[in-house]
Amino acid sequence: MLRHLIPGAILCLLASAYGFVPRAAPEVDKNFGLYAYGDSVGGLSLFYADGKAFIGDPSNSTSSSAVPVSFKRSSGSNEWIANPNSTTITKTDASWSDEMLYIPSSSSSSRQMGFTSKAVSNETTTGFIFYGQWVMVETKSGDISSSFFVRASSDGGVYALLWNVTDDDTAIPISLRSAKPSN
Image (cartoon, rainbow, N blue to C red):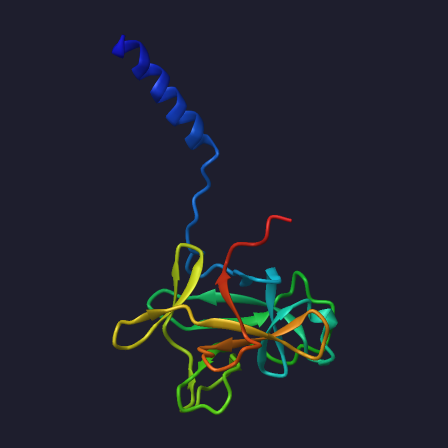
C-alpha cells in the first residue's frame, strides 16, 4: 500500500512547487525600485523630492523636483546609487543623477532618509543589503536592522521615509522591498 502513496505524494510536491516564484534580491548592476509595505502603505514606491526620500505617487507631491527613482547596486559595494527612473518620469526637470541613498546617523537632528552625492558625517550611505527582496541595513559591527518608518506629509498620499524612529506615535513601521505590488 505504501508504494502506491509515494508516487501520489511526489506528484503533489511537484504540483505545489510549480507555482513557486523565487524571491531573490535584484541582480548586481541591474536597476530596481523600492516599495513600502505596511499599514495604509501597500506597495507604494520610493521617490526623490528636494533631496529627500518619500513614499507614494510623486505626482501628488508639491515639490517641483519629485521624480520616481531607479536604484543600482554594484559588486563589492553596499551603496545604492539612485537616478531618475527614465521609464516612468513625466517631469523634464530632473537635475540630479548618481546620488546615494542614505540613512541619517544617530547624531542627525532629522530622521528622514534622503539622497546625496557626497555623504557628510551625519549621513550613512553604506550598509544597504537585501535579505531576499527585503531591504536591511548592516552596521559596521555586523548588526542588521530594518527600522524603516513613514510619516504622512501634508501632500495627500505622500509619506516621508524615516529611519529608526522610536519616539513618534505618528510614524508607521514599514518594510522596504524590491518586490512590486501585484495590483
